[in-house]
Structure formats: structure tokens, C-alpha cells
Length: 495
Image 1 (cartoon, rainbow, N blue to C red):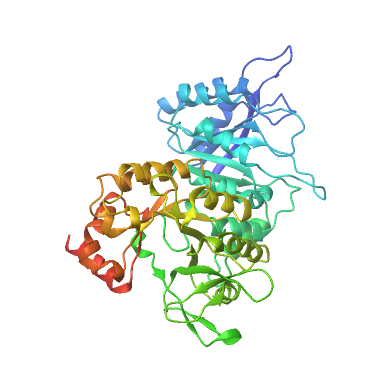
Image 2 (cartoon, rainbow, N blue to C red):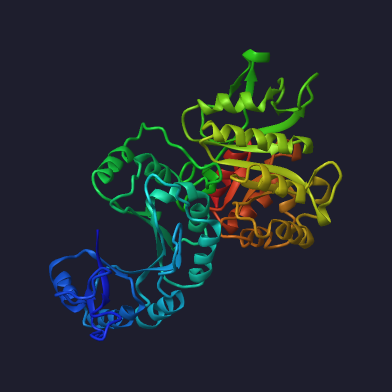
């Protein structure tokens, strides 16, 4: 629990301005309660955290000086949040934000142990057309606070967050120091469904709630219901759906589906486990009409991608989709199908889209051109995790420096999460630091190491698997058949 209070300067911007911090919310500039008096009372009567909200930069310096005095006297032994709207946000016709440079500099100088709470000014008018937070707004905030050492919680207007979730999902992924504080104005017609969506797509420690009743109680009740249907952002992380925060990536399995029957009666079958469902897609040219994306099943007939995904949409449990584009011509039709089903609400799961790419030092005919792959994702359905891989033809000497450089340059600047697809066998005789270098591309970057019987037995890929394992346990996934996975786990247990 946190006690929140608005702070300004007595007589702000008048001839009677004193410079004394007082407890008042604009337009009020006088109060019978100074910040010093408020702190004396709160520190003596409560153990709750403190959040001070500044509407004027003039109040910040003197207030931080007071906090420093109380802290050095041993009286502040609780979390302290320092809040101000430092950027212009959605629907704001005028600029009233607090100066961002001075706000951040004063906190660094006078009270760096605080949690920063920098937000955007917002305006929301019910029953009118309201815009939400943009990518540019969120990126500007990251540019301001990304290099700072403090924990940061971004106060965001709850009614606008779901529509901007791709941007906030990206922001939360930039640092483990980050969280969001969802706040509600009294007139905001906030829905419980939007709150549940945000909760489903984030770790519990990443979100704080500053909401009115009765919606807060309604939300708490439904959030605790283990049987409710959860809806996930297609471009989101596998955390927390398939992997707990800081959990082991080895716990995420890749499932290869089968098929029973033929034609319209064909049904998708899966092992009785949870994980990422791997779908290899191609393109079928019908006698009439447009080409149709299809899914190839091992040892069985093909099924249209649409039919496959609609069947999977009814599957209970925890799972995601890994769509591997096996034929270059299937790329855009497959993405278009994903976009179509997502719009209809039939794709409430994380989705990876991957392909073996051709680019630069790994340009090999017959594979998807790297630039076309990224352009198609951006234009047709950008809300995915991108999963690019290298052609086997170029991996005879492992993942050489130029192969890594060209892939990293290709993916530079992507706002989507990227999971680089590596083959275990060539990884085992690659340059030291290959996995480390790929993970350093972005805070949200992961790698997925694959090994299958076509490349040899478990021992043939063992060195590469253990090399990746030694670098990171949370951000490395393993695409392995069940017996290879068991061998790896046994290896880890022995070591």
C-alpha cells in the first residue's frame, strides 16, 4: 500500500510565493498542511510507502531536501515514489508537463534512492473519439529514463492501456527495473476485461493498480478465478503463460502436431502436454481462386492453416503458436490469415513467425529474403515474435562472426521480440560468445536451439546445447524431441 499526496509551492506563481512545499492539488496554491507536517504525521502513524506527485518543478527541490533530512535522521524506512508527468501524452491540446530534464536531474542529485514515477499528461473525454499512447510517446520516455539506475514505474491511464499494449509490452521488456501503475480518473468508464487483459500479459510484479471502487474489487475477484478464459497478446512474451518470471527456458516444450482423417473431417492431434505448437506452412494452389496457406504434418496430409488454427483455438491449457514458413511463397498469405483470425478473436495466444532467411553472408537461393520477411511482418501482421534462422548450407564452420553480424544488422531496430533460431550441432563448434552476442541485441532477444534426429543423435548436438545453457537459462529455449530433452535434463542433473 502507498499513501499518495500532491505537492506544490505555497502561493505558486503569485507575489505571495514562499517556496514552502504544501499539500495541494492545482488549481489550489494554499493549504493549512505543509509537506513537512504531512511527513511528520505519516511517518509517525503508518508503515505505508509514500508517493509524492509534483505538478510544478518549483516544489521538487525543496521537497527532496525535506525527504533527505528525514531519511538521514533514520525516519524514512519505506519505499518512496517521486511522480510527475514529464511528457505530453494522448489528446492533450496544450503543453503543461513538468520539465523532464530538471525533474530527472533533481532526483539524481538530491534523492536517488527513490523509485521514479514519470508519466504523460493525458486527456480523456467519454463518448468522444479518444486517441491512446503512441509508439513515439513510449520510445521518448524510454530514451529519457533508460540509462538511469533507479527502479521506474510508469503511471499510465488505465482506460488507454489495452489499445496501446504493443507499446507498453515493448517498454516493460526494456528493463527488469520497469513496471506500470494503472490509474483511473473518476469519470473514466474502465472495463474489468481490459484490466484482466493487462494482467494476463504481464508478470504480477510489473503492474500496480490505483483504481476506484467498485471496479477494483470486481477486478480482484475475477483475477483470482483460475477457471476464467485468459486472452494473450500475440506479440507478447512466453512469460508468464509458459514460463514463470526468471524461470528456466528448458521448461518450455515444442510440440509437433499430427492429423487424423482426411479432407473436411481431418482433426489436429497433439501430445497431452503444454508448450509451443510448431506448424510448418506451405502454399496450396487450388484449381480456382487464390493460393491457400496450408500446414504440413509429418507422415500425413496437409490441412489449411485456417482450419488448423480454428481447431487449436478451442484447445484448453497453456500453449502458443510457432509458425515456420517452410515455403517463401507462403509468407504473406500466412501472415494475412493470422491477421484475419486475430481480428476475429480466434488467436488469443503468443505467436512466433519464423523462417530460414537469405541475407548478406548467408544469402542462399530458395529461402525467404531477409528484407522481404521483415517487410511482410511489418506490413501484414506485426504483432508477433520474429524467429529468424540461418540456412544449413552456410553453417559448415559454425556460426561465424560475419553470419552473426549480418543477422544482427538485419534485425536491428525491430520493436518486436526476436528469437534467433540456432542449430545445436554447428553451434557446438562456433566462435565463443555467439549466444551472448545474439542475446545482447535487445533486452527482449532470446535464442532457440534446435536439434533433431536428422542431424544425428543427442551426442552430436550436446556441445552446442550445453554451450547455450551455460550462457543464460531464462532466455534460451530448446526445440528438441522428447528423448533429446530428457537426455539434456539428465546431463544438466549430472553437472
